[in-house]
Structures are given as structure tokens and as C-alpha cells.
Image 1 (cartoon, rainbow, N blue to C red):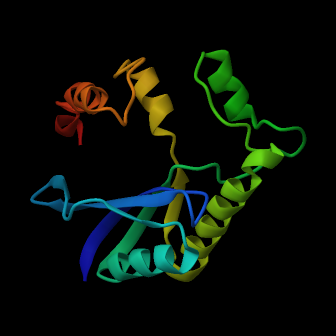
Image 2 (spheres, rainbow, N blue to C red; image 1 turned 45 degrees about the vertical axis):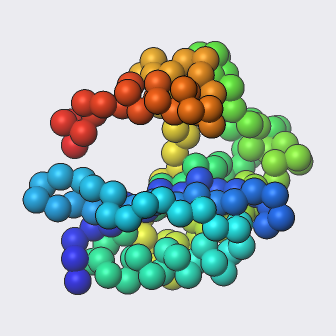
Length: 162
């Protein structure tokens, strides 16, 4: 068994239209590395679980970072963290809105499964908010070739912090 694996999941909402992107980092010689290329699979729970189990099974511990809301507001449509993001000009989906409920429920279900079945530590992440806070690629489209280059260039040097 190896040390800790860090699995990142960009959770898609629909089996038919949206894929789920996944990648993982491992530590080698004191550096975090992507051990294999990121994958995109249909957003089917069984396939997502299978991928995670296959990777996590090789490691002593697992940290799963999910790019989706992992809780709902106690009342209303927005959690406190979403109100704060919006106050700082960072757009986000209101996790309590009905039109995002399938995505939020999928994220919560994945979190519960990973914690209960794998004993994983699960965290909610929002890469867009991090990019905005770090002033990386403001206003660029991440799916456009030029936008990806700007974001990747902006991230250069952060590996020295790890």
C-alpha cells in the first residue's frame, strides 16, 4: 500500500449530457504528481464509484475533492458561503435552488458514499472561486485554447508551494 492519494472530481449532472471529470495526485519524492491523465466518464454513479475504488484501493488514505455543493442551505436557496462569494463578485449556483437539486444531491450522495465506504476525507472545492481570488485568468473561457493557456500559465510556480 502507498501513502495518500488526492482525487479531484468535477461532477457532471446528467448521464446523457454532462461527463464527470476525474484526476488524481500522488506524492513521489516529496512532490505531488498527476500519475495518469485526467479522465472523463459519463456521470453514472456506478462508473464514478468504480473509478474511485480502483485508485483508492492502492493507498492507505484518500482525500476526495468534489467540485459541487456538498450541502444545502438550512432555509432559502443560498448557503452562507455562497452569499459571501457573491458579495465578493464571484458567481456561484445557489445550492438550494430546485434547478440544481439533482447536481447537489449527486454531490452529497458521492460524499456520503466516499466517507462511509472508503473512509475518505471529502472536501468541497470551487476552482473558479480560487482562480478569481488568486487573480488567475479573470474573464477568460476555460474551455477555449487561449483561456486554458492563460490559466495554466497563471498556475506556474504554485507547485513550489506544495
